[in-house]
Image 1 (cartoon, rainbow, N blue to C red):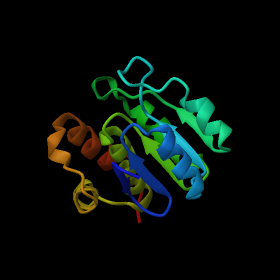
Image 2 (image 1 turned 120 degrees about the horizontal axis):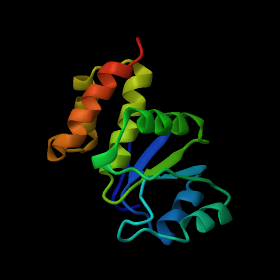
Image 3 (image 1 turned 45 degrees about the horizontal axis):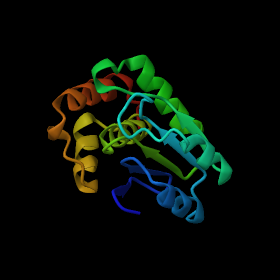
Length: 149
């Protein structure tokens, strides 16, 4: 699939997926899709839930806007990531929110420091400095909610 970054064996992130990518994900064994796009975003795919469920995958849509992101919403998203059947495909408009949530999930569950998480993000190909507001929120959340190893 294009514009896709595999975070680990359980989590993959993407920009907005197409019908073809969704079918490919189902063929590759994905079990669930987490959509972080808001229905009012340009390019939001209104039939996505119907298409995902028709392929036998579980679907969840939790709209996220960086400008209104809260600790409570992030905690809800990370809990959803934990509970969805794996492997899970997480997507948003350009994969920034999806990547941040997947990496925050891993960092808080594996006891990483924000610096370790940013190192992992860089290794995967995310440029965290391109989104300073998200990077600052990420660092604060991981520092506050990280679990001990």
